[in-house]
Structure formats: C-alpha cells, structure tokens
Image 1 (cartoon, rainbow, N blue to C red):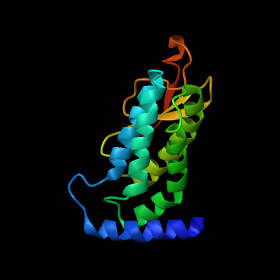
Image 2 (cartoon, one colour):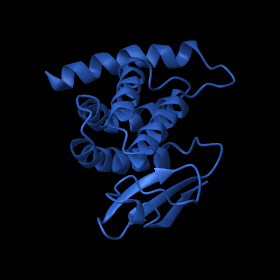
Image 3 (cartoon, rainbow, N blue to C red):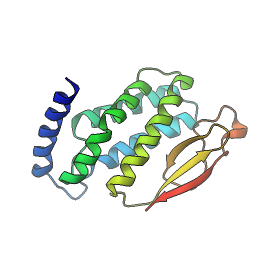
Image 4 (cartoon, rainbow, N blue to C red):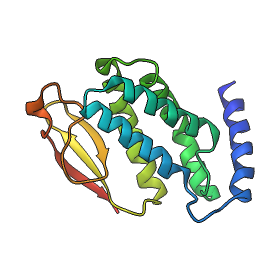
Length: 165
C-alpha cells in the first residue's frame, strides 16, 4: 500500500514539475523556512509555535514539495519525503517541547540530507551540533542558538560542523 501511495504522489508531482517553474520556484525554500521557525520556537521553549509551524510544513510536504525541482531532484526528495512527513506530523501533534525535540532531531538529520542532496539553497545553511546531547540541527546563521537546551546556560552550547553553500 505504501509503494502504491508513493507512486501516486510521484505521478502527481511529476506533472506539477513540468507545469510550473516560476522565478521563486522552490517550495523546499518555504519548507526550510518552516523548519527554521520550528527550530526558533524550540530555542524559545515555545511548543505551541513549534506545533503550528510543523503543521504548516506538513501541508507543504503533502501538497507540492517538489515545486521547481527537476526529475532527478524530485526522485531524491521522494526517497526522503516519508521521513520528513512523519517527523513534521509528530512535532505537530503536541505542544510539549520534550516530546517535540526528539522528532526535531530526526527531522534535522533528514532535512540536512535532503538539502545537501538537492543543492538548491541560495544562501549558506549551517549544520550545528550540540556535544552535550550529541544532536544536530540546521541554522541560517553561524550564531549558535541550541534548540535542545533545557536552561538558558545551554542556549549557546554547540558549534558549526558543516556549511551547505
């Protein structure tokens, strides 16, 4: 059943790829913006905003995540799409930060893989690492704002480990 569903999604999005390629053409940019909003909400210990932004991300992931991608990029995204959907859905089902953070860690890992593979970002994206929790996240800046922190002392705990240019 899962294979059939993915096939239907592929056929639908394949036709969408051929239909539209506007100047600001990548929905992955919007998806990444929602990811950053989730990260910032977790930095602020705001589970409600994280829930809302995860659900906004989920809408994009289940509607037109491939907008603007070529066939090879879509195939690559399709191989990670189910994980992105599952993690954003899981974050979006609760306002409890302690339940959201483990799913955010998984979402971060998959998002890094997808963005690195697609090579469509127009500005640098920084992969950051928290040595205390041994978890990664993505940021639009080099400034460390740790979404896994439990106290204000840990908010700057971490380092940049990779840059996607």
